[in-house]
Length: 287
Image (cartoon, rainbow, N blue to C red; front, side, top):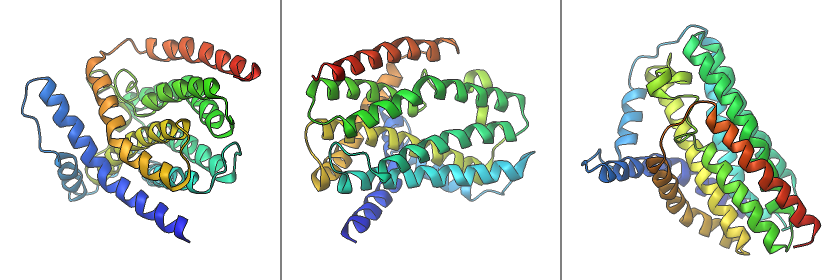
């Protein structure tokens, strides 16, 4: 019962703070560009404004609305499970909670692609296929590294190698430059979100913010577990470390530039596949 209450509280706090962290990122980006920038709560202001507008259903709207609702539900449930896992998981054992978290994360990505195709717009469809390409290039390695961290046992070199893979994949999951190719506003005019407006765009925006929070918290939890913390300590430390990871992700996105659409996925494969082979070799050596 206590685990469930703590998970609920931590998840609600995360959902409330995620737009605030996004506002901090916008403020940081403005400061680096020597601008004043918007207030820290600007993302919340934008969301409230979008939800107050008239609901406009795009072409192919039934599927679009359904997938949006399921997508944000899957993301919230993923955050809740991520908070629950350190409280109940025994180090070295992959439980049902871990499998459910991986499944929900995969479902959320799949729903983004379905939503893009359902909008019946060429830019949206192209964005959906780009999301599919990016998911194929990173998510299998994300699953591999997360399972390795949970079930790897006391092998410090193996855990550090797995942490490196997960850190890269988590950044890709956050859909920041140069891995925002599914949206790519300068090129695809918002891509997967091009047909959305009002409350539907608000849900899509919140979905992106929650995805970034999930990526930051997942990285923070991986760092904490690699350091040897579990249970309540791991949950508290990961939540405290999440804004710091978010800031690091923001700084990386500000410093990186856009690349050609095919460069991102290819670079990921050329980086993550050799790292995974090295990690498996390290495990075989017992390090």
